[in-house]
Figure 1 (cartoon, one colour):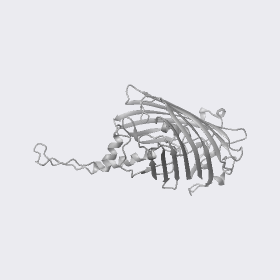
Figure 2: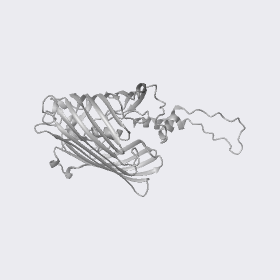
Figure 3: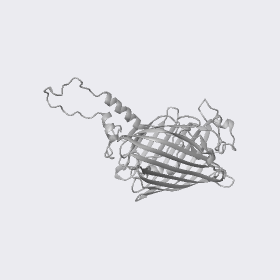
Figure 4: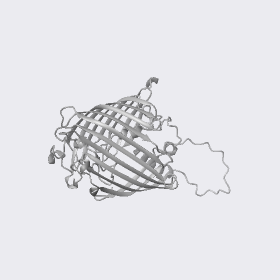
Length: 416
């Protein structure tokens, strides 16, 4: 999505550079030979490709050099922009096998590296899509990103993250801004993935090894998490574990357009098991559910969009979910008026509602309301502590896709 902000800037530059013949008299055209049609430049080709829903997905983009494609992305909420270089080689030697690798380094030092090999799910020559941030609904977010890809796929994947400024305010719904600290998250993830789609139902299974570690954060404005917390207030802080995990999930896609829906529903559910390889201190089961509904009000120009999410981690008796793996909201995923990972605990419930109004065929306005809460158990959950935010947004779009969105939301702590 971040590359579309570059495309929007490119559009302004292209328009600003167009000649204006203010002094020409249309009634007396000057005789001249028929002009030779000029070849479209890079900016115009990029804009036309972005705004054209019927563009060939197999067409090569103007900014791809052989198997390499540069991008600017945000790998995780709060990471800042990062130049990213992708290496994408599909159908190697006609074998049906694909290889994708990428590396990112953000302006504040966030690093992300990944690679996939096998029959990787993708559309046309577009890059494979995988969740990178610490606020993603793992593993359901990956299923949703690839749910439109038909066929059966099997591949192996590896990633390494080094996120040096992750925020921690404490565990639970009563954490306060004054308790903000920061830590450095490093982890490695190796797994095998299988995925298939039957009609509108996508199924995914995955299993692998995760090796996280926690270090002192690099943000000089806040103390390190380890200085003011213990294993009691931040489980997993001093006793990190290696995990094996097994996950299974499904995504039912019944929307008219996945990337810019006007009607229909989408439903997802995933169940994961995380086992501590060193001891029994951090073993838990995760259930993630995501429901989205879209209701047109008379026409596709007016749409009500609803979303409900449940992110439930249940530790074994005598175990705890590591704080850096707990469900959280704030940042770019849920209750976006709050800072990244503002609230976290074992259980998370969130809802969102938007009224979307088509101002123009390529411009959409939205009124937004979000609410949610975290709690250690479902028994402790109460609507009396619900956190709220509200705001408005504007989107650049085509009929089938949202190209760029800018939302401003206000909560009790800030406007973001």
